Amino acid sequence: MSGVIAATVAAPSALSGGANVIAVGVLLAEFGMFRQALLRDQVRLYAAQSALISVLAVVVAATRHLPDLYALAALSFALKAVIVPVVLRRLLRGIGAIGGDPRWGDIAGSHALSVANAVLVAIAVAAFGFFTVAALGITSPVLPATALSVSVAVILVAFVLMIVRRDVVSQAIGFLSLENGVSLTALVVAAGLPLILEVAFLFDLLVAVVVFGLLIRVHHGRAESMSTADLTRLRG
Image (cartoon, rainbow, N blue to C red):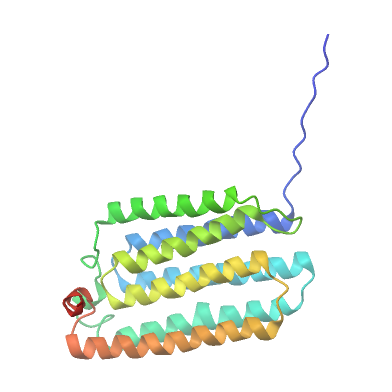
């Protein structure tokens, strides 16, 4: 009677398991932005996505013994999960998108594609990014390979969101969520970067929020609308 050889599979480490779960949560939040018809709901999803990035920073700090990441997690949460959403909500209230004319809060008609088609395109792009990175065979004892593949998928899906939405606020949120994807990639690939560099990236985000805030106000002031569809006539 031949013996049975049982193949054993090593359990994922706390870093790998935690990073993979959080990365999937970030990706699901990105897909959720496609289905939201109200600007405030997109802002809430961005805040939730940013909070997940901060949680990942804490997980990486605890498992890899990098105390600087605790400070980064606190700064990231304060800026991206609290300050930026508050600024966006106040900006939207100021131009009547929240609590004012309901047409400016409703973005259901701002799709270049239908919601179903946009989600299908996003799924195809996410699958392309995921399997392309997986095919590269990047391996390391401290690298959560699945989380890296998902982070690239998040970046590509954020690009799709900016392309298929025809309102300036959704495009801004798409850019900010793309930055979340970049932060996710940085945490799983190069978590040991000096704190000063990580803070510099957050400062760049703050500058981007100020620029987008000015663009939203100027665009709304001139067009009296959030839609960017009329800007296509400016193409040469």
